[in-house]
Length: 119
Length: 177
Image 1 (tube, each protein chain N blue to C red):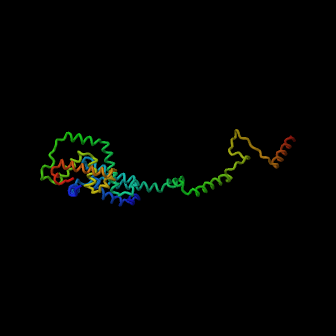
Image 2: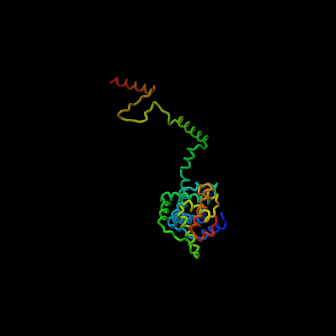
Image 3: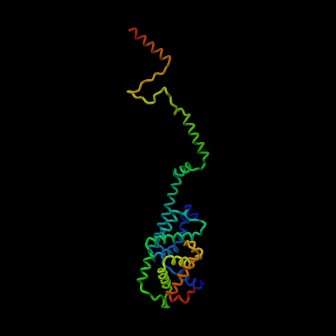
């Protein structure tokens, strides 16, 4: 293409003025930018980043060790062991007292029976 | 741009001030010379930048990328409006104006008449023409922005200039091909 004609058209278009964009557009954009960044900052401080790390593939060894330790303690903690000699919940209507074999207690019971026979 | 991504408001403000006039002009000329539409599109363009700054590919120059986004917005708008059809209909109804037979015509009027001619050609010619002659992009950059081969850009520019020369008697002696 001819350079003169290109220059002619370029000059004609570059010198053309149509006015400025509305100032309100700039204000709205600045506000939107501020809002977006404040939201991002809140998100950074929230639990989501920790949850993201927790469920990601990062630090897999560390997570395995932590899960193993929790598992280990949950098995061997006495709070979770089941004692067959105790009733965990009492109900006055349906529960029966479970007698635990105890030689001292047994002798005491026998003595009381003997007393009854005297009457 | 990296500063914008990291939330630097001053950087965003600087970016806006640098490009607002150019983008406003582009939208104004591409979308029917309407100031309201140009303002709306300018806002939408920078909102895209705020909401998804990561969509910018640093491998490309920022201005090329920005014009590429703006051009896609215009394309979508044309699709919505079916504006090309409107222009063709308008042209069919418009009486043939004796463009620029008057040699004392002013500069502002020349540009308006250039755009009146480009409007009748369609958005693909107008966008190539604006990017090349108003924004000063090279053929290669225009091709990148419009996602077209360089040859297609050249032929569109050639056709646009030819049409201008035919319609604008005033430019006939000055535009050579």
